[in-house]
Amino acid sequence: MATKVSRFALLFNPPTLMVEYVDLQDDSKYIKKILIKNLKKVKESTVLVNELRSKYPALLGPNVVEEAQVRGLVERLMKSVQIALNPSSVTTATAQKHGTANNVTGTSTGTVMFKRVAAPTSENDIVDLDLNVVSDEVNFTAKRIMDSRFEANRLKPGDPGYEYDKAVEFEQPTEPTDWDEDED
Image 1: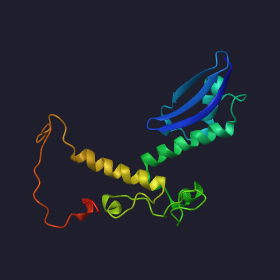
Image 2 (image 1 turned 90 degrees about the vertical axis):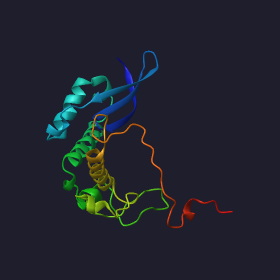
Image 3 (image 1 turned 180 degrees about the vertical axis):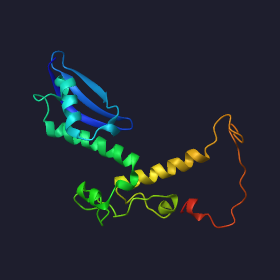
Image 4 (image 1 turned 30 degrees about the horizontal axis):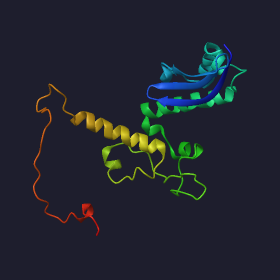
């Protein structure tokens, strides 16, 4: 099968490498989703890269795409799994290496830069944290902490206290609520 790879995409949960390509015989466009199982057990990206390139030679082979590009994609997936398994492993040095930690929140060149913050480890660490100006790793870690709290408090059908389509009446506000009024 003669193909031409158009672009790549990554899905981090579950770890998936997506390849958009054109079949040169009929000029049709396809997307191949390659689910990468047991990524957390992989220690060296080179092993996985070689396995992928041999399993999908028409999409990832030496004549189609550079090994460095495939390695870079695999390493990004491996890094996301590492962060998900051990959020405290993300350091400022790692964030700086990947260009995700800086003191400035925006520049005129279009490059987005982030405020340098240590990765949160508990709910107390994210109370006053502005997630709009932190690195992706810190944001990811904070969202995982919030997700765990949400799941712990969520009521599902069958749980005691679960009520379908619950309606609540609120009292009149005791403070001014001018933030939602029109400015005429």
